[in-house]
Image 1 (spheres, chains in turn cyan, green):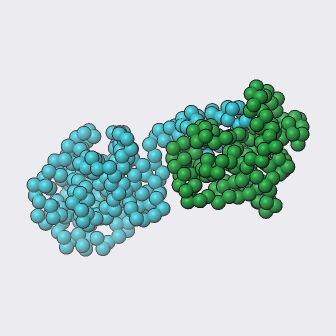
Image 2: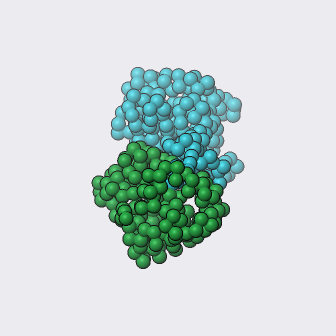
Image 3: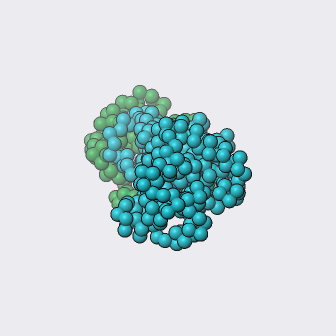
Length: 260
Length: 180
């Protein structure tokens, strides 16, 4: 029970099965990391939006508009945090999408006082870091599970593309490190270790990226050119993604009737 | 003579400043041309427009109006429903509530005005009035249109004659504009 975060074992197995099935639907086997999760989900019809929110109250949300679902994540969080948040929201999409909107603060692992939040955190862990992927990595690195070191944990975290905190929690869940090790290693700076190992540090930093679905600009332009939104509305929408509408070669919808 | 009050979105102000004829508005509509708060803020993004609007507001021939809570709520609803920006939505809400004539050059704004039964004209409609009342010559209007186009303002006409012939194809409309 200690490794299932308070969930019943049968429930934990069910989450594992759902996470596996979710991977299969994305064409991903259990023994590989998920690279470019934002694009992977976006291509599967879920709209992933990354945007620097400018406030700290929430870090991600899942919303539905008509028949489309959107995962929106705050890109002022570290990249590792964003990855986990997106997987968490994907869990909500997979299992709870009949509910309209989720606004989440998934501060792993304690965010969920609510069952569904705990469920989504467990899903994200199983989905991003399956046991098979960790075992394969250990085998490829010729490492013994029992003798995992802190630098190994950082390299594994890099390979899985998740946050350091999420990786340590997962290692405890997989019984590869003890809770005491988790606490001790949690005191270390992963950036310092990563720099010593010569591995990238981008997972520990916010990227403040603005990522919107590819059609975003085209749909706004189309709406303007069809006279359904005004130029200033278009300007404001495109300014959010750093595009100046005045520099676009637009077909302006206003005819002489609209200016006399 | 009609003394209808008017409310403008940003386009009239920026177009007429770009055309070098902003001062003519004072003769045409002094004391009855209103702008909502967001339009004043939007106008301040360009130095020349900011200077012209600030001076006109100071001299009180251009008037800034405040929206009531009901009008603000209506503006929010108009913005969502008709795809117009905040300043345009505020102008539409005030026009609809108080019976003012809207001056707007946006397709989306004019569609909204029609749906809300708001009487509307645009910067070229006001230009027609200015020329027909003798405050500008047709040549000055041509120059103004050319300057607006050079300043990247979207004006779907190249010469004043285009405006006149279009307006006068509807005599009732032409008369309404002259008397506005």
